[in-house]
Length: 441
Image (cartoon, rainbow, N blue to C red; front, side, top):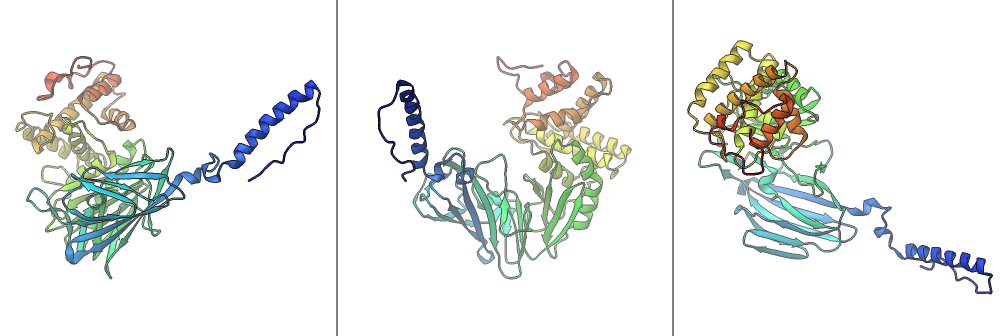
C-alpha cells in the first residue's frame, strides 16, 4: 500500500534542508507503519487470542469418551502442544498438521490456521484394587476432567492466550454437572493463572439428581446418580453451618463448589479438585470420632494448598484440623465434642512413627492435627491473644508456592516474633533438618 506520495525536489535553504531531513525521517516511519499487517500491530490485543474448544463424546456402552481439541487461530499463534505423560488408558491419536507419539509423550504442531487433535480414553479406573476413582457405565459416570484431558504444555507466540470452551455430547436423556457454570453452551473455561486454559475438576454424567443452593455467596451443587443414597439435602444443611465460617478465612472468595457422590462401584473415600470434590455416598457426614470426611475435602478444595514432596502432613493436617474447627465454629458440634474429637486424634496419633513423608496416613494426619492445635495455642499465647493459626493460614494462602517445613516455620516466626517451639525440628518426628544455607528453628 502506497500511503504517502513523493516529495518534489527543489533547491532549499540550509534551514529548510534540515526541516526536510526531519520530514523525510518521519515519512519513513509512516511508510514502515503502513507496510505492517494489522494482525502484527501492538494496538490489536485480540490478535493474540486463539480459540481452543474441547468436544467430549460420552460412549457409556464402551466406558470410553472420544475427545476432540479444535484450535482456531487468526494466524500461527499456537505453535506446539505436548502431552508429556500419556496414560495407558489413552489411545487412537490423530490430528491435523504434524503429530508425533512416542515413549509416552505426544507432540502436536497444528497448522497455522488451526486444526483438530483427537484421542480416545477408557474411563473406568480402579484405585489400588479398592473401588473406582473414575467410572462410566450404562446409566451414569463420575470422573475428573484430568482423567480424559491430559495436562498440556504449549509453545506459542509471546503474549498469546487461549479462549477455551468445553462441550459434552451425551446420550439421549443424560445430563451433566461440572465445576463450571452451565448457563451458557459451550461451557467457558477461565483460569487466570494460565495462558492455555484446560478443563479441570469432577464431572458427573448420566441419570443424575442435582440440588443447588447459594451459601455465603458460593454457588453450591451436589450431584449423584439417581437411586444411590446420595444425601444431597443433608450435605447442603451441613454446608449452611460451616461454609460461611470457611469463607471468612479465605483471602479470595470461592465462587463455586461442586460435590459429586455415588455408591458402588466407586472408591470409598474422598478426593478434591480446584473447585469440586468427590465423596462416596456411604461416608458419614460426621464420623463417630467427630471428624467429617465431607468437610475434610471441602477444606482441601477451598485452600488448594500444595505441599513439598515430604510435607503431605501439612496439607492433610490443615484439612483435618480446620474440618473439625469449622464444625465447632458453625455450631454443627459443641465445644465439648470438639475437645473429645481432638483427644481421639491424639490417641490415633500414637500409631504414627513420623510426620514427614510422601503420603500422610490416617495416624500421621492425626499427629499433624495435634501439631496445628498446639501451634494455634502457642501463637495465641505469645501474641497476647492478637494472633492465631487463622492468621498463619491467610499468609500461607497469599503465596501459592508449595508448602514445606521451613516455610511453615518462617510464617509462624513472623507472627510470633521468634522461632516456634512447637515447630522445632526436634518435635517434628521424621522431618529432616534443613540443609546448609536454610533456616531451621
